[in-house]
Image (cartoon, rainbow over all chains, first blue to last red; front, side, top):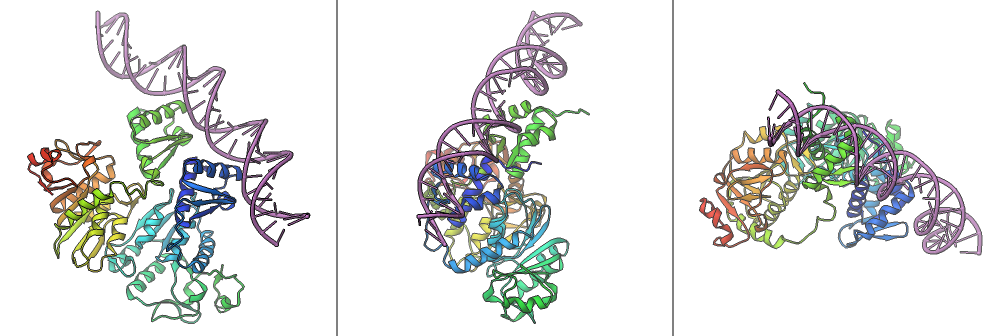
Length: 252
Length: 252
DNA sequence: TAAAAACCTGCATAAACCTGCATAAATATA
DNA sequence: TATATTTATGCAGGTTTATGCAGGTTTTTA
């Protein structure tokens, strides 16, 4: 198998990134696509000639830059992007990875390297859709009965299917975490699915933005001890994270 | 047994690889098929002439790989909306309805009455997502292994699940229809799924925009006789539809 | 206003490309 | 059956494309 990409693949990736983020940085593309500065510049030049984007100093912006409702909460989305970036480093080629739903997970899927060749398993419809943009990954959807609130499959079927799976990694988009109680949720259906995912994985990663640290919801998903790694947008030595560090979690 | 492959076998292999990965590299194919560089290049050239792939420097990409710029074309959406409106009338409360993928079906989902209370079953991820906006409907997704080109689940699992289902209605988003040959498709995976859906339904509805009338693609989904209702944006007495009327189809 | 970052121009090179020809197998024809 | 024709493939050679690098210029930013 080759290591390099076709020029067209890079172009498709750049356009896709533009559709998602409305802008791309040359330097970022250089590292993510692992090519020289010149190649990226030439790519952007060609795409600009084809009228597919607008070249600017340092990168490019989307042609239909509708800065209206797309990124409503820029503040939160910056944090989620930071988390997503950190999370990506944990995934290696040929891994089997479980994903829940949620915007943080979705951001992570967007940040995945186009070179990554792995298998992703998820019960979330929006995440499955997003994963399909990635040229090299296999996508497995689990479940039949879709839950409209959670935008994912829930119920016995999901749990049953998960019981036949052994994954390397599981990323949990987390709504509430607290050093004593662990991860909690407000919906029973979601708790049921997340518990089954935790059972099916070797390593459990919780992704959570700082504002949800030290909050509790009615139903427990898992205790702190079951989590291997906690990812937030904060620096690992931030004092807010101290209680989690004390419990032995690895922080990113 | 022969050590080498027939040209047709190589071609089939290349197309299959393209369906799975969206791209192929000449060098990779050379080593895997154990033929010279020239042979592979000629293979790709011929397949490109037949319109089955797009040749690029270093290999080839799948036709549907160019989904980048073509996403938001409002073109034909008026026609599709007309079709969608007509189709909606066929769905009554408490029905079980099968849906394929495609933009026409998606338009129909948008046009559904918010009062409708029915069960929808689909292997298409975008359609499932769209259906979740509807407050009163139940949504069942079928399949696990997702096909990136078709943006839907394909394979044995889908067929198996469909064999346990009995639906009232099946709406087929149709790419090519002709009064003699019936409905045809270009991708085997999709044909397989559509056939299984047809087996699982009482009544079959084909939705097709006029520009695709009287076109044929390589693989047959079903004969004209298996279709109950044909919906286009044209008036039912349009002369373009006469051949279908003569075959006994009900027209909307 | 100076340093850093991004940009450009031109050049080098390897990989992929093409054209034309040779050969052997498959197929058609006498 | 023997011979001619077509087809599929490989090879030699010359050309083009994609990409990185060197060195210099412009733009941004602190």
